Image: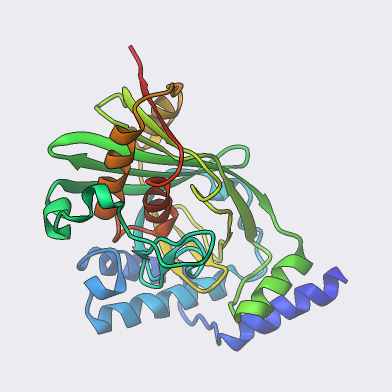
Length: 307
């Protein structure tokens, strides 16, 4: 059964016509400057740049076929430098291109922000926020961390979502790949997130926990290529991610300190309003971060004021 599944995976990959005619390191060297042109999404770059990024992604994916990419080499600190779509194709409330859209359990369309602040123009909300950096770290032994640093009215803040992951069996990967027409490989993991944290201040002393079943849905993510400079990610429904390794001290340690602060009960209105503002501001971010904040504005949240 496993052999049949593995063959199916390779067939799906072959259907994407992955080819590589140059050394992988050369392709990475050519890819890196393309990531710095414009923003992190396809709509922020010109069509030629996007086409070159796609070609490099496919070439590096070909170079990674048949290799064990979830071993020691995958661990490290990474900055999110490019993403072409939501991590799960919209099931978490996002749309392709990384734009946030909330939903309710009944399937009805929901507001991106609650009525308490929905009267504010989105342009006003966005001006209150300034994005510093977006990271996704892979930590031993089997932990993945989404870490977004930004400023709210000039004050430092962050969103951190920690998750555990497990490699998916070959037959499960084959089924997911066949269902979505995506060129997943055996280097595919299933990711289960803890409740994300929204914190303010240099040390995260004002700390919100986003609770509820809709706070962060599990996702499946393939790693088609990794080396000492980049890691590629391919979502189960086709979204492409390029993560660039970083040695920035703050990105490596700040998230852990923020998660160490235990949340306590606080005023719901204050928390809901703060979450709503952040949800509106992070709409351009990958929906692994943006959608949970938007949904959480109508669910249970708690606040901590650590000493």
